[in-house]
Length: 280
Image (cartoon, rainbow, N blue to C red):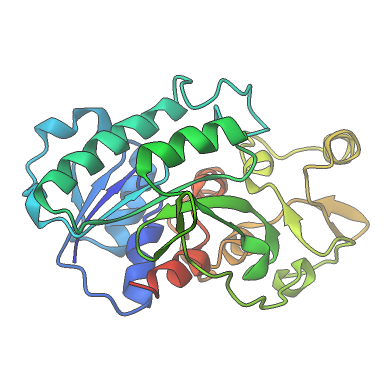
């Protein structure tokens, strides 16, 4: 397949394709974070970096040859954790750039496949706008079925669809529950919750957080998962974060904790994307 991946992040789409045995001929990545690009080129040196998504008309791509387009457009304006500016917010509105690119490819190759992902806390209004723009309604899958974290997401795709009385919907079945608990992926310590919550909220730290800060954040937000160890509490370490997203322990070894946490927090859950791609 020839693939275009927008907002490519840590390149989960490419890794998932490889893991399910789909051969990739050319893989075009649109990404602007230097450390995301560094990680991608480390694992897949043949990736073709094309840069800023808003400059897509300048890219040197044979668009008629593209078989699959991937998009994990920014969720900041859609998420309940943000300011709820909505799909027309300054960041989340980049979704419409994906729509432009998809429509252009469709004009050359009507059989092109696509996958778009966004947060499960997006409003019904925004989900409706996105669905009508793509011509298909999403399936909602929580990563808790295949990993030790709670991660509710919408996935729009034409990889497999069905028609209802009024709409076309993404027909990807729910993956089998693997029964993985937070305690199962720890390198040490213990926890008193079954699943980890909110990778993103925990891993944008500039310095080692104090015990007082961690406990206060846990008490006031409930959106932080603490691990008890040696009469103290800590956040998930880098190995545990990789496991929470379904990646091998050493997948982000070349990056520091903060950069690794940022990419994993923004990224896709690898076993979920493998599950979706298994229907190609």
